[in-house]
Image (cartoon, rainbow, N blue to C red; front, side, top):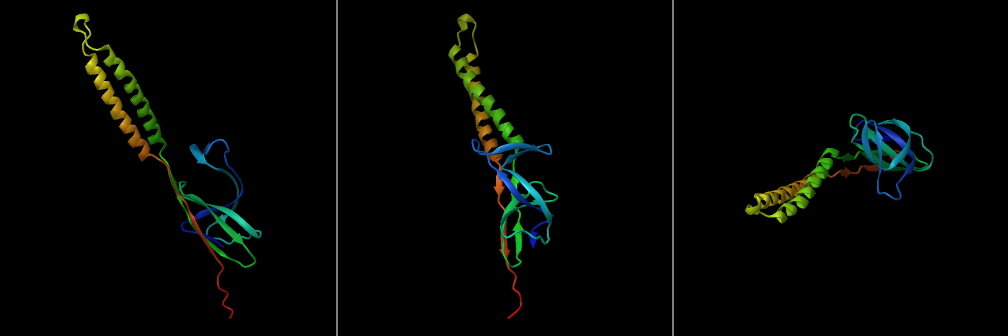
Length: 177
């Protein structure tokens, strides 16, 4: 028997692929970017349910029906006695907008760090009519530093978080002495 902490769909993972050159594989699923291992599954049931699986170890993917951010896998072992497996579904959160914003802020920060010293290098020369370059150079460096600090803070705040699920499996007592 399979059960979960929320009404969910249970699928058996029949094949898994991991990237060898890259740590994660990106794909598009229903209009959103999905980063992680790619799996082939076969549907089992909607929890709570009873399933009949072959003897051995099985990986089961649990997906909450009304919250796509809550999916996780659990491993169950099928033996000669019927057993119950209960899964607490994990959660994965990400903020692609925050990461993109951090990258854009970082690029403008680099531009400020490159442009500021160039303006400082021109210097002020009132005889040639060049004034305000030193002020603009320091201002550009300050803005670049502020954008760099903001990019680091936004990037750290936008990191993806993964809270894995947890599975408990047991064989119920038979009641015979």
